[in-house]
Image 1 (cartoon, rainbow, N blue to C red):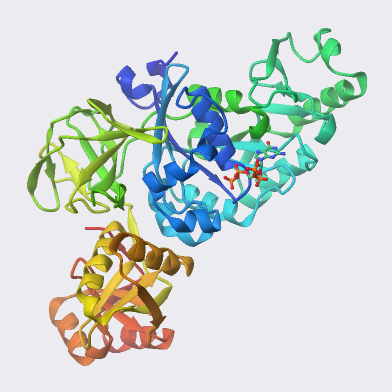
Image 2 (image 1 turned 180 degrees about the vertical axis):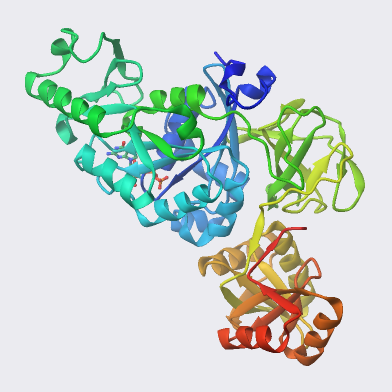
Length: 537
Ligand code: G4P
């Protein structure tokens, strides 16, 4: 059961409803098993009745939450979503990270909304490129990480080797929460080192939870009833070595992001998943203070939150947009009037939604740590703050300089105005940067990864019925311009052909050469060019 003691010792006790929340994301390399693990989480969380549903309902889910042909065609998860479910007296809020490496910006923002991450690795492949990238993003925010080493039912690497690789390549200490017994075809299950339990996998029924036998340590004679002698002696030897060589579990060190507990399992066989969920519930952090112009603590009474993702056209029939808001503090109730800090206007949140499994449901209340979906007509943008009156400004949601620029051309020139509108909408959603050059017509669109152009083209066609082409642009880099007004004005005057504005109206310098950027620094010392801009800073 949840207890207020789960707040780190240096903070006041949290109200029980907040203390029981666990808001986290799963990070992994494609194919490591994130979808399978998510499905098992939902199964044990009671959000779905039967494994296989996430996939079976894939079509419906996609049209509802992603509406992306792309996802179907390429088998990648394009947009993030959030799901909530209860487990062991805790409320889990699982924020899905987009799986493809091209979507690092979106992923980065997703990770600003969580308090912890589960890192899934494939037992045969170890730490892969995308795992490493995502891990680095987690590290920037010192997120606590729980590791799940998946696919232990198949031929996997040696356990010490896996642990060593994580320690060395990610520079984080690893402590085993469980230890695998056998491997591949001989994989029997794990010894749970945190609770002294023998967990035995059932190969016959993939949805059956492991048989769990509580023991008096590794020398308990009952072990021999379930584990053949050769595997038993190997287990005892390895655990003894692990205890000598590896650090024990230390919650503070884990919460500070220095130490990751690792569970070994097989998501598809439902093995090790429940232990991992227990780990999240028992040791994972409750909602943490959020960075803003002051630190916002979850237990503060006034409700505050920030938008970390906007998804347009979730229901193509309604043309609505849903802003995903991480509640930073307080107890939210439906119908509350909130101050939309950027516009200074009040807004009544009449139909907030929580995403329970694949369905969205209007909710009456939510607490700090929850991810609320707020349908709106475009007022809410990434980085926006909602408060009960305070002019808060949340920090740490950056907007990255796009690495690829292309000119957008309407397939039908008569529809150019419509295209402009669609592009602006995607810019507000954060799906792309859209720059309007000072000189000439049309737009330059910037993305972080090439695949995003395909995603955009497919969405513009699907959602607006507009064919669009992205053609080579004369520019390859974009930098935001800031500095003293006279210096900026002089710079703009001298570089009109390179200046554009983004969807917020902020000045951007477009160029082809790093050399140009260096030259600006030399010729216009009062002007600053930056590769990121903090959203609505
Ligand atoms: P992802 O979201 O991280 O990309 O991975 P996903 O869960 O889709 O899993 C990738 C593949 O690995 C799937 O196989 C899945 O069934 C398999 N898998 C997941 N967990 C385990 C496990 O514990 N053991 C084994 N042996 N395989 C596992 P697939 O063939 O690509 O898809 P499918 O035909 O099973 O749907």
